[in-house]
Amino acid sequence: MVPDVSTGADTRGLIVYLFGPGRRDEHTDPHIVAAWDMAGAPDPGRDPAATYTQLAKRLDHHVDLRTRELGGKKPPQHVWHCPVRTAPGDRYLTDAEWAQIARRVVHATGIAPEDDDKACRWIAVRHADDHIHIMGTTVRADGRRPRTHRDGQRAQAECRKIEAECGLRRLKSGDLTAPRTPTGAERAKAERQGQTVTARHWLREQAYAVAAAVRNEADYFTVLESLGIKVKTRLGPETGDVIGYSLAAPGDTNAAGEPVWYGGSKLAPDLSINRLRERLPDQEVADHTRYVADPTDPWRHTTTAIRTARTVLDSDDDAAAQGHLAAFGDALYNIASATTGPHRAELRAAATAFNRARRSATRADHQAATALRKAAKELAYASNEPGGLAIALLFATVHLTRAAAKWHEQRGHEQQAAAAEEALRHLQAGYQQAATPVLADLTRRAPRAATVRRFDQDVRAALPDHANRILADPAWTALTTTLAHAETAGHNPRRLLAELGTQRELDSAEHPAEVLNWRITAQPNRRTQAARSRGTTSGTPARSATPHPPAAPVAMRPEERSRHR
Image 1 (cartoon, rainbow, N blue to C red):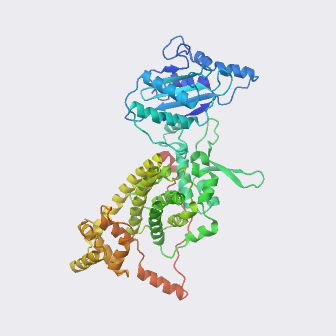
Image 2 (cartoon, helix red, strand yellow):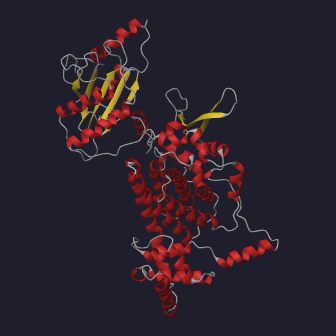
Image 3 (cartoon, rainbow, N blue to C red):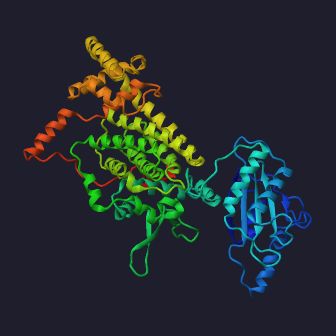
């Protein structure tokens, strides 16, 4: 059950909407199911003699009195509005049940405490099977304003109790770190314009994608503008420094033709200017990420950093763990950006879903995750997708996301755990799309039988406790090909298996050979490393990747808005 508290200043306008046909003629049989006084509240839905104006005047009675007392100054935002909606699949609720729910919500939020004869006037209107709209005017009979501090959170808490008592679907509790949901007006506007998402949602995705890739604050604003997004900064009166910013989507205007602006913190809590500065590195540090000696280094570095993050989640340092989850959220955007295969859509969806899991009430130690954040930013400059190594990275993201869901669940972060689970489903689907043909190809190119028997002996000697499961795994033949490649690259197979087998327990792995296959794939080529070291020692500079500006990983170009926004 979802309540959504907001305030406004137009009593009659909201009444017209509640009792009208709806934006798409979806309102059927609108009528009042509960009110401050059922006998004294005109019901335009059931009483032919009742009008919108009559109801508005009755609701605004105490507001009008207060206005005269104040010399014509009506209290600002005096209209309180709270739709309450059941979840898809919930049972049908009768008018009497909705009436009781409305009374509990206005009591819990302070609009109309039970047995308070001076409380605000309110009505609950039902015009669909699955929800009601509670509307009130926030001036009491004694002229005072109601105590509505944290009314949205109190409404949520009351709805959790109602769900349990009425046998409804139990939704996840929040912790005030979720981004603002688009308003009904924003959703209706997107539908009229043929967009699949609202401007708020589209801007939030672009901001996250750009922040994941750029090196500093200045680049952040520059890349956003290159996407056609309007940027407006707010400067401090004394220092002239940027103290806030707002964004407007291309072509998104109000009735006057002016851009519709959304502040960074209104898009998401961690997109405020101060939170961004905590995550964006300094110019000098970031510039080093533009040059790597080997084009495969960004993939390998990110894989290693993600595996390190997995161990941090098992530690007792919650601040460091939260910092790594925030950095991992950025990494998912950059991984999707650097991916070219058909599974890219699943990676994009995973990055979007994980946004809710990247922050919680636990304050993040972003410095602890510097290695992961830096490695992920290297992917924004990567110029190629190195086959199996890219899949090894994707395999690592699957395991870290599963660990993130467990970490949040253990700490009671219900919404974040659910978001991580959703991201996990997308990553698993993307991994299967990408890995299946590669594993099949490795299987086809298996080494000779004598080599396979030697690797069999290596597994039994290096990992005796796991050998039977590894050899019985369908991915074993593919692993033999990868072991042969590693041997050619200068690794000792038995020593490599022993080393990688101790990094994490293999007991819980459903496919241990598959786990080892991608761990080995992510190992650097020792012969190449040795040659590079000799070249550097002799004065020959190491090869560097051609620097180029980040392309805002999952950000969509302005011309793509109509298909994705």
